[in-house]
Length: 210
Image (cartoon, rainbow, N blue to C red; front, side, top):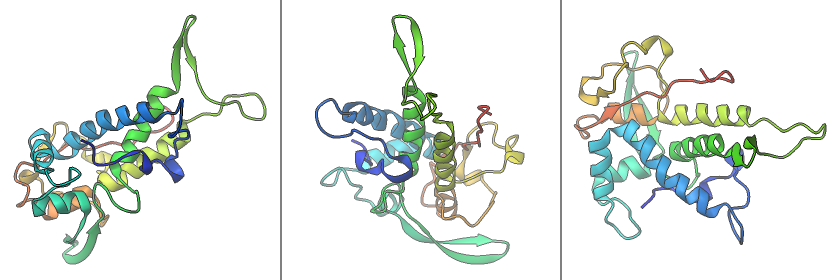
């Protein structure tokens, strides 16, 4: 069971050829299955992830308990920042706008692995040539997708890497970094509802891979 599907790969994370014979449908379905689990375990911790999946027993694999409905479908929450209470809306792990941190993470990982292929003479670059005969780089689109994923996931400033050297249990977190309607801020504001939450940050990357 997956929370998102191939319809999320449109716009800035468009993946072509997802329908018909000889399509990428099988490959992207496998990528969703693999990378959705991967990113959700990093966001939630394995136990909370398992509880979420176990709760998705409704028709079509939808959650039935309110805290998991809110996590998946989104909900308003009150965010305290600089001593003020601010009303925000977490848009959920899936939504009608097709803006999901799962999709952006999957896109990044899918393109990362598909940018090369094995042949009889070794590993080769894949992709179309541009007008000058050079292969177009996927790095800029990958980095843009990664940064959008981080916005939805919850951006942690690099200065805090020493504090997040290991995953941190949500009940022990005392850091508020911004006013983004991110998964981190939603879970932080509601951490009493998610006592098993364990958070692993996603750090920024650049064209040098750092």
